[in-house]
Length: 164
Image (tube, rainbow, N blue to C red; front, side, top):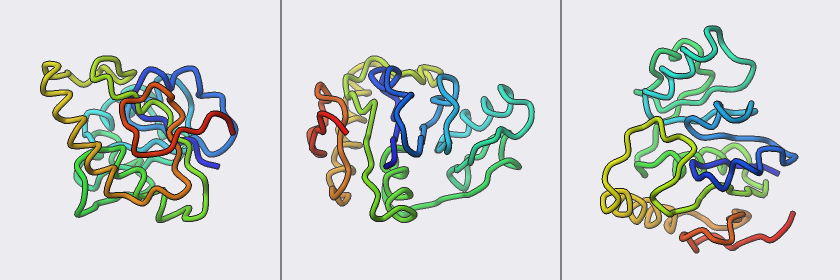
């Protein structure tokens, strides 16, 4: 089982789940993952400043955006589809773990509260527009064995799973 922690604050109370822990972006500030997955250079910069030496978990970054932690990156990715870390992470996980159940935490969709508020947020209307683009990209991905663990998520493309 894979636990994928996206940027929504609802994920913060679920970092203790059993299984492979994959955190996106600044999730490493809240929990030690098995895999840290990012797409923005600022995340690589923060990893480098926070840890000072390579942390003991796998680092996976967008090919052009390793940031200051680029020498620590264990695996690079680049996809022709998608412009959001959540989309890329799901594609990457499906490639490497095709038969595993993926539980998605923090896909809140409120456009307001993120645990990775380090990245400057645009005004609410623009955030909602971006969320809708992300949702349309998520809609194009396979849905088998992917579950949204937030019953209040605005994204309804993955079935909600009440318990594991």
